[in-house]
Length: 557
Image (tube, rainbow, N blue to C red; front, side, top):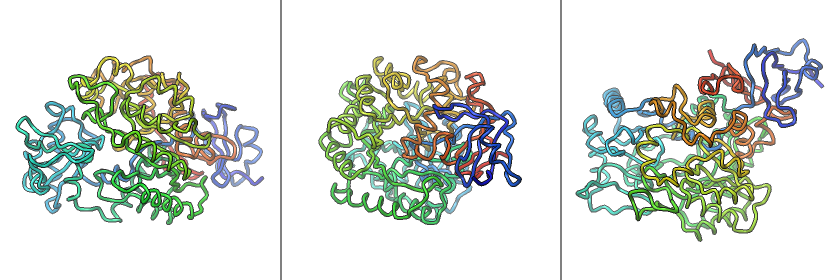
């Protein structure tokens, strides 16, 4: 065997490999793990080997994000981004400043607002009019399920009190029936079709920027939960992905979940996604080195609870006849799932409410059993009936959940919990119950809905409270009062959900997700050991270095 290119030693190494959970040295040759343990590493250490002293730091496998939207996140960073602030006045001040600094922009576009800062939980066009009145302005909510516009945008879109709600969406109206300037779900398309379309160069730049951002957080792979033309989006996100993949620009292990468009005929859509999978596969890359695969299809089944579009078995509290929205009937979903399975696709279904979860599990198990080589997953599971969790465990279905949401921040306390009955609240982000039922837990962020920081996500999974530095969780309740404390996970379980299990959900567990002989050298080096710090300090841990396929892709200055 040739000499190692690099040997890492001198700190704590957590492998996530059940056969050998910890070690004290790792050697890398040509981007792969060539030896594990001091004796094995010493045997291949030569005069040209670089020796990296961890110096009491901790190495873990590189993180994977099982559910993100990096094209949208990257574009948001290029517009008026509200994601790093929280508050009514701070939002308006930043929007006003951005408008002043960009006098030539035809539209003022941005994203990242949280509904709890507005009276009644929803923004109004008059708020946006107060800072941007001369041009159309539109801002997408942090969860991408609502679009807030000013009066000028309403006028250009031709939306009035007489405009009907589109299929799968809602125009929010005041007590007089007038549009308030808030569009929910597919209704956003009434205005988003008017937005200036980003150029191909813009979208590629956004995706590259997102990759760099992920690397700074220790992330070496991700699943884009909707590659194609998403609802409310003017661009086809497949195009920048295939372009960058051809050019070898991905230093990450990327899975593109191809978007199932409910407005495109079934047979036509099956053909399109088959062609796209074949086009990516023809690039014939080394999976261990990074790149793109399109082996998954993403289906949006319901909305979110905050705007009453998450599909519930029981009605919302205070809204006796409102059970949310299902984007497909059970029969329609069953047909789609059968077609995708017949074409060997993994399936990724958005299901926030417990009724959506039931329908999703029914569809994914309709043939009596799920093939062992399939990575079918259900995303979000905000409200989960334990009966359906048992069914998921029996069939090996993955719960693709977002841990950062499982805390009592002001959005949850003020805009979501009041809509839920006590029994629904008791089944809210029940990660511990999912574990106990035997469900595979894979963690994702849904970025830009919420921060993609796996350290912050792990903190919430373990503590059920907000990290100290999260701008959207700064109130006393979020910081100190756990949400369903009994649903907390251990540090080991949280890190596994962000590494090996997320790699499994993304279809890369054979080459990544654990520090195992022969796998890709994908590591995150942390300034402290998550197992050794007080659990209240997990969110303060910092990523010092990220290594992807043996290459240093991020190093903290």
